[in-house]
Image 1 (cartoon, one colour):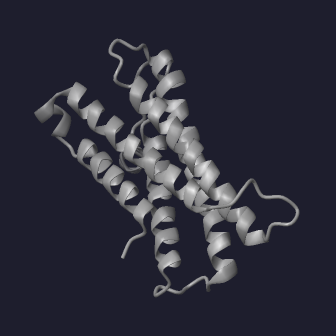
Image 2 (cartoon, helix red, strand yellow; image 1 turned 180 degrees about the vertical axis):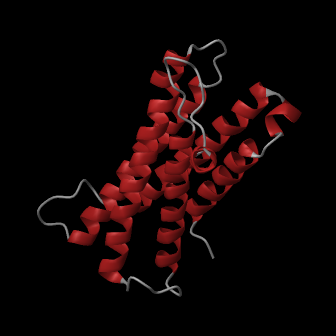
Length: 185
């Protein structure tokens, strides 16, 4: 069974997945697609807030155990990352942004949010492995921690893939397409 905050991450992930499906934006329109991303980001933030509150600990101090410090920092950094996703997905709904404005107000918060997710996931893995084994698929915390890590890696990849060159407004080409073109030349 998933922990209660995990459901917010699951719903947010599903909404992000739906919004990213090829043809979805054409089917529902760009505005509805952006709203789907934004609503997904709200589920992420609610889940991160629950995780932070469930950590049940004050700001860690010298008397805190290592696990408590890593757990609290993981929850705090993850919450900050989700707020950055709220910013990037909310501003993406503004029409008429230039490539430079989009880079500053959409892509940068997205990439910083993705970095925060990766850092938080790494800290959570450390906190989990302090109490459990690195490989213990039967432990509830272990599954949640590693599912979170997989999601964080996916967000990092999507943030890099979403880069738009501010000088031209061109979307960054997928790596496999550029490699394929080099191999053919």
